[in-house]
Length: 416
Image 1 (tube, rainbow, N blue to C red):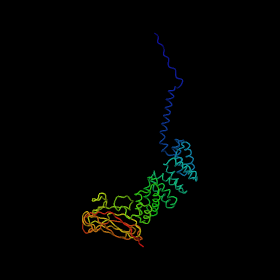
Image 2: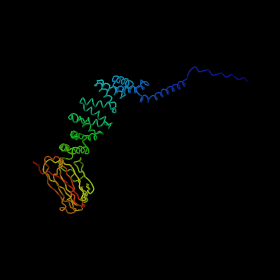
Image 3: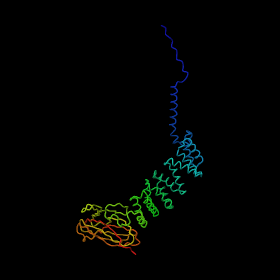
């Protein structure tokens, strides 16, 4: 049987679909690999190198625009940022560079429109918001300026000192127009509210704090007791007692009609220093406790060794000039040395003593409540006073436990 000769296969005249797909995928992979490879260069290489590698990249164009702006070549920066925006219309940084370039070229109205748009697009574009803060402030537009400043300090604690100084400068220089705007920002309880209030320390700044407190008190977010207490304490520490008394009078916390706050030790809330502050040290322990003879009542219990010296309890008060009656109840739990403890009234403005009232142990039988009282006068020059429970130490230790309750001061006349 004869074998048939095998003819060689005829060469293909063209590529089939499969080959085209393979070649296309290969080319695409090469192109994608190239794009991936050059991304670090586009982002990190010197601008001159990046623009040679990818001259049409919006990222490279924006970087070039930023470099030109930093070098002071304003027109080049504007032109490059416009090219970047043509290729990437929503590039906030390119828009910001264009706006700053317009501003440096003296076209501030155009810059204002561009940077306002950049600020609206991104709350994180700090340079845009910073320029808008300064621009609006120079125009006296506190509402817009402070709104952009609020955007900045909510994000960046590192620039809070600069922005806080801006708030304070505006508040002291132009209080009628700026304070309502600043109070409006504080009224929404931003995360920087406490930090800002704590920066107000000088007498002029504390006057600003007092004015803000009054505005907030009339609004939807009054100062908390802690915030108000910080202002009160700072005013007292800097001896701004007239401002302190006026602020307490107008805010009404604690009620100015009562000379003693929480005289019954019922844990009433009040801002410092118009509430009891208790001190403890070796030989002296003072605490507000439930009366062991009457569980429905609270009082201050003093455990004293009769030898240590110091203040046990104190609170600030602001009584106008006049005559007053001090009264308190006390009982001795153990020991017989209640006379070694005394309630004192002194002038906060100069530290001068006004009066002192001791608890005479001989007047109290063991375990029985006894009333003590006395009269004193507040002079005209004394706008604030300290009420304190202090020790009157003896030469030797003589432990005693004494309770005090119902501390009151009542006006009985005015000094002429």
